Image (cartoon, rainbow, N blue to C red):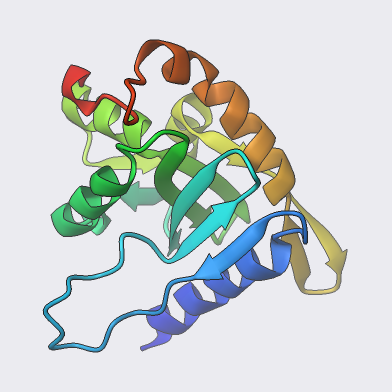
Length: 175
C-alpha cells in the first residue's frame, strides 16, 4: 500500500509542476473487472504542439527495473504514439537523489532491443533520456520544470519527426 501512496504523490507532483499554459489531464484508473483495458498512461500533457502520454514511475532504489514496464502498458502507449505529434514515455523518479528523467517510448524500444541490461541507473538515463530538472520552492515542496521538459522533448524529437514520421506518426517498425 505504501508504494501506491508514494506513486500517487509523484503523480500529484507532476500535476502541481505543470504550468497553466500546458494542459494537464489525469487519466483515472479503471475499476478492476472492466473489459475496456487499462489507460495508456497516468497523465496526458499538451502544450499546443505535442501531446505527451506520461506514465509516472518512482523508485527508492539506485536502479529502475525495466520489468516495471508491463507489456500491456507498453502496447497501449505504442497505439497512442502512432499519431503525428504524439509522444509517450515514462517519467522516472529516483527518490534518494530527487532526480527525474523522461524516457521516451522510442528510446525505450531501442534500449530494450539493443541491450542485455534488465535495469537502468541514473548514468544510463543521463545518456538516453531527458533530464527533468526540479527546484525547491519551500521546505519539502519541489516543482519539476515541465515547460523545459517540453522544450527538450521538441529538440530531442526534431530529427525523429523528420526522419521517422510517416503521415500517421512514429514508425516503430525500424526498431
